[in-house]
Image (cartoon, rainbow, N blue to C red; front, top):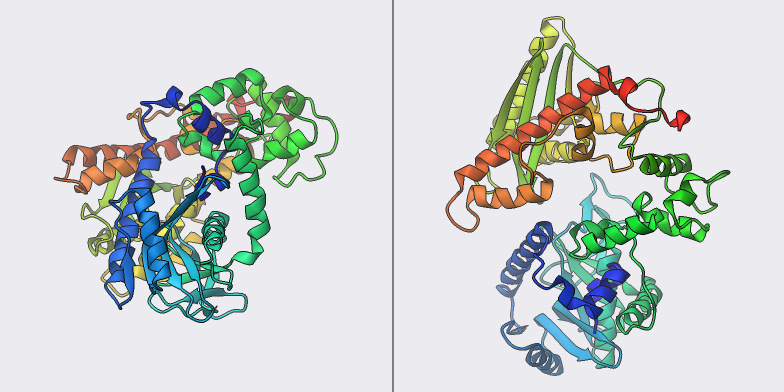
Length: 522
């Protein structure tokens, strides 16, 4: 028996979970997975409370019942013609192997049957600044009324569509599927229902389901392969050892790269390192030569390889390293800075310890921005050069712009135009981009992978973005009294991040050429 989640997750994990469950008995759940699950549960509860408080005709299935009782209650509610059913569970299907549930079923008054609507804790659309063709199809939360929405664009989410088709197939079995062949998703922010045309993914769903149920029933063999999901999987230590022993090509070319290489007859790192000639015909993953160099570097134990004869990085008289900490999509609670002038460095944090989202976030952001712009202005007035640095600017750019929009008009808050003028200018420097342009990184390009090569190490052995989410929950008292020790831990983690960027930049400027081999020499 499998649910829709298995359709976009690892095939080999499905095999291991069902055939060797005792081998991971007692293995703790990955902290990042747990946090996302808890956040999703809280999000669904908030959506439920908001929706069920409005209008009549609701049937809320008791989540405390057994799965069988919940399924019987769901069928009874549909038979009675309930307008909306929350927490619907459909009867498991031993013959097909399907099991599934939907946060919401909406009666299709125009055509009969029910429309599945799922609640997800990620963004499903992006706003547009002006109306444009090819927008999303959305519906009001409280009245099912699909219409073209030119002010939103869809964020593609195949996993959402496949889950909706899974529920549709189960409704179809009992004669309750709407002939409209549509489903809906309520995402983070829950200001609308995004309407999906399920006819576009029916064939893909049927293909994937047939494959996964064959795996679950032991009818096809699976092998491990390195994919993004691996890092949070309880089987990863076992699989990674096997992959390294096999010298499997996915160790250095993870995900779909490995699939393309296997299709070209390359299954090991050694075969990839020895590749001669043009790239495989269907290679669509950047410069193929990088993959070959990565394999050569792995065989020699090299953490980095230079793409260029001489490494360069932008420097200035006054340098400020910036690192932002956010909690999921709720807000940016900390802007950490490191001011570097004349060989001295001073860390300064601009933080709010009110749980985000909070208006106090506007205060801390305004103080950060004001300080940064004042430092910049004083530097320029003194006839010196200025630069601000981050590592992988996407997160910082997002929260700079989002904060300007969310707190527009409040004291000290810059305009979106001011933010854009700064981040699109020459003084905002992304060290991640400088690393990407000038190095091939066999172990990954994350700051915690690259900075140790330059000699920097974090004080906290557990330091990571995922771990900081747990620390933050304790620091602000999500489950009890605020833990001041965890606040200190977060500040030290943030301070180490900005110092790491500084150390890496200085190393690139002074020592990288001598310490890192050039790709052309491998």
